[in-house]
Length: 128
Image (cartoon, rainbow, N blue to C red; front, side):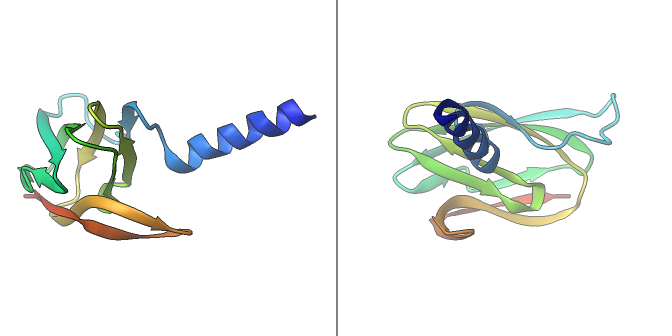
């Protein structure tokens, strides 16, 4: 009984927080097979994203490689439902289909219960 509760709690944590290392794939559903791919390298250091402005063309398969150079960061791109943690010194790869034009904020977030707020590390994604 105790073992099944522990397994259940671990499973729930993974579902709520997503993958903490490795790869986190947002929905690629509806993406045509001939969609162009754009890889973006993003680094977190000293509470700053480099680059802090990213531009992609609409209908692009975006491969986002996010690396932390100095400590653990929480990453969120609400417009495309991305949310993951980048452990210090590691890189996390995430993919999404940029099908919605617009300007979207991404950043390091601080959790407050079920809500979050930006922790000062904010950038912009522009889908043209």
